[in-house]
Image (cartoon, rainbow, N blue to C red; front, side, top):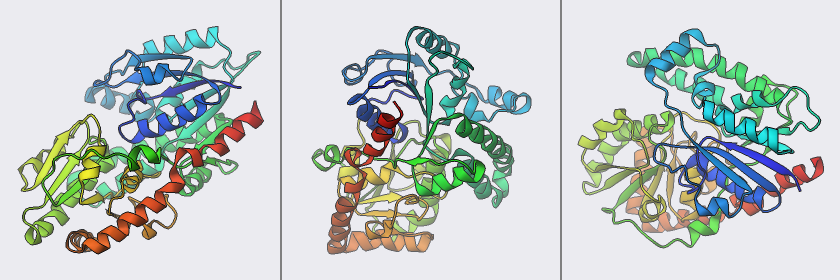
Length: 403
């Protein structure tokens, strides 16, 4: 049995969206077989008192408030620092003090780094030690590729050229930093074959262990509560200050939504998730568009959706939102990039990469209940392969062999 220290950028419980969903699934799986300590950050809307579901499964947990970085801080660091902005986002003296105290007190066998923004804390490990822990780096995204794609998307729009310039600097810094972290790690975990290949492109000798994003399927499939939504309801969920989510829903609102309303004027689209970016304020004035902000649980909204949409134009890794919707038996319309990382997604998801095709797919599901029911069934079948009970055994086997 290994003693594991897990570092996460936010409290993984409750597992509402994205990063927290993956971190909670892996944490719970590891804790069932190993001793786990958790050191994590509390987002502004999270408590620093550990919730009972966490304390029930881990040996110890410490929660530190997330640091605040202003735009001025980011601009200063852009000019005087060489590390990417992502590596500076969670710099915290309090976190360092807590991690150093634990490293001095306990003999950890593994440090699990959940996401590239946690990697700077690896410099707390001594260069030599009688018991130097192994490092597992869980690459939630291939971050340099994500930033590079965002820059390419901005480059074709003159109003976004300042953002494209920023991305041009950042993706190169990310590439160097990401490569250094991968070389430092004893185990690199990628979420998809595509991400594994991208990481091998910057560290050719790398052999990532692929553990896709997953969910506990039963917790979605058996869920019955539905939000009171105006029907037909299109639903999109995610952290709404995350650049790919913002760009994707703005594209949908501008290029797709007007044509849907022209055919189905009583339709509504619900954008569900915490921290809506100011760029989304324009949606509040559009007929039928509803921005909910943070909600206690996204499942009632997904469950009430007539059609679940994944209109992403940039991204990386695999989208947990797609798995959530599939487990709840939803008809899903997604761009190819939105379903990237999943093998043969077209067997369960209606793929549409152009506005007119995306519109037609959405209307097709609204106007053809039988077709919608067919895709709902396909989604339920497809998602079974992404249950944590199916995904985690290779990781557990690796730890057992290495311990």
